[in-house]
Length: 335
Image (cartoon, rainbow, N blue to C red; front, side):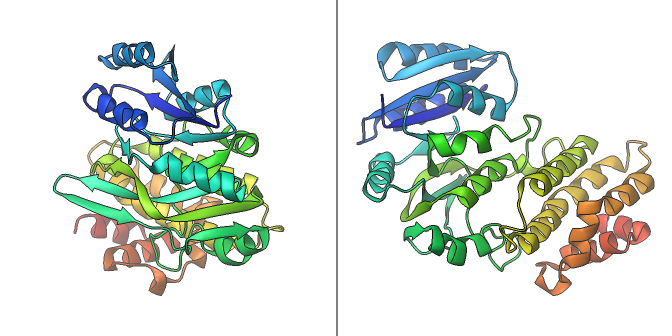
């Protein structure tokens, strides 16, 4: 049985897949298996998965009908045998020492979760993204005092205290299972955090490393992709799932963080969605007022302090959504 299972969902990434898999096979740590989950690719990705599985016995490849990113992750988890699991997106890559350092920390400390930082890579630039937590080992008491109060909201708007990404972390497999399978398969935005934060809230311990070992290929247009009415429904599903899964009696510090998180998710989605709808014939006013009245959205925009929100346009949007100012909202969309 390997110490680590690395799960790689694959869908139409032929141009990047070899770089991703070569970086995993170049790891200085070797006690791992790789589970390639081909999620119904229609390009050459499927053949590449089979090719890599044929040349390294640590790689197992599975082909399935397209079901989305989380569906592929869950399928990989079902087949994982390692004590710990990790996730790599198939257009990203890893530093050679990533799993030596992270698995070494897991073995030494016995931590349920190990986190490193990551680097966002865009054409012509690289930006290191760092958690606000100081590097080191956190037992349960220290997690409750220093990590939980800042996980979703660091005190700076649009800044997490702990990255919601699955890909810069190791998870003890037996702890992580229920959290991964609680994530609705239809979510395309915010799904990682549902699993990550739920697992951290249950963890007995965690370890944070100072180095950035994971390289995320940043696509500047990804957040505005498929911005339609369906994205508003995803917001509702995301917020409802957090409300259902988060025990505020046990973790009262999460209440404000969730409200601020709901607010900035709405600020990410409302402007591009409603801007795209203006020429579609959709009843813009009715939909806007419905979203403003949706209970988690209403709670969030009543709770957030406008002075905490960054950017003049975002402050204006908060004012419009809080008071259901449809005409003013449309005016700001145009400028």
